[in-house]
Length: 237
Image: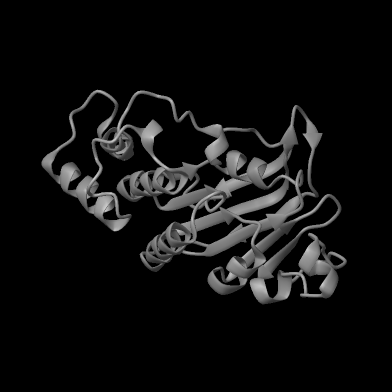
């Protein structure tokens, strides 16, 4: 379990959202939603240890931060780096093997299975700069499968990819959830949240809402169909 106690998110001491208090339970599947600039990506980076909180505490069961598989937005990734699909997916072994150790036969089996799971078994030698947006995201999900981390953080993983890939990656997320992983995903599509994510955390400048997705998601109205609108914010549960 991961507990947030009056956690304040921000950059250089500047708060971007209301203080957060609550828990991500082990094995939970949670969507993070909110308007732009409310700290969704900042929360993932803080959980991953890439950014310090402005104030408050973030604690993990057992005191130590668990192994984390963190997938940032595609716009933050360098697609011109001269490596191929297999090279990137094999990087998922690094937390277990270290940078300088050779991957084992068991690792190679895991890599092959991950490539098959995301439909890339025919292109392990393809340079990453030759991949489409959907293929690139499939590759990153294959690396995530190889990592076998108990905590998975995904920042807008479906942005700019085709519907077929989106459906496939949702299946992979469901597979990880059934395997007991704790998964936290930043999303904008409320329909996806309603269909696939049992829990939702809505971030806002004044007050956050956290609880079952059916209680948190904005009600569908003619106005909400054309803009990103929220009802008045309150704590649920």
